[in-house]
Image (cartoon, rainbow, N blue to C red; front, side, top):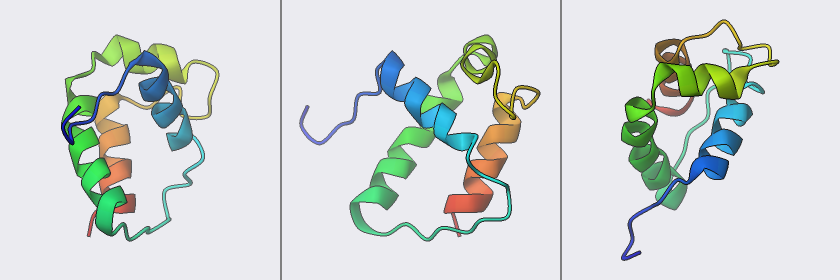
Amino acid sequence: MNGEHHYDGKHLKDIIRLFTLLEGEEKVQLTGMPSKDFKNFLPVFNELENDRVRNILKGSKLFNFTKEDLLKLLERTYLK
């Protein structure tokens, strides 16, 4: 894939479900490849339809969160 990342439905679902583990107070400093991967993921996540995100979160503690809420949580947790 020439250094580009492809996030298929399963990977997106796994990543979004990992959000449910966050409490909102964590601060994680990513470096190297994880930092690059995260920055590549953000635009992909931003393009997801709100209904798809809500469907993935169904049954989790973040069910009432919007895509924008999750984006803020991710940025607060993983970006300086």
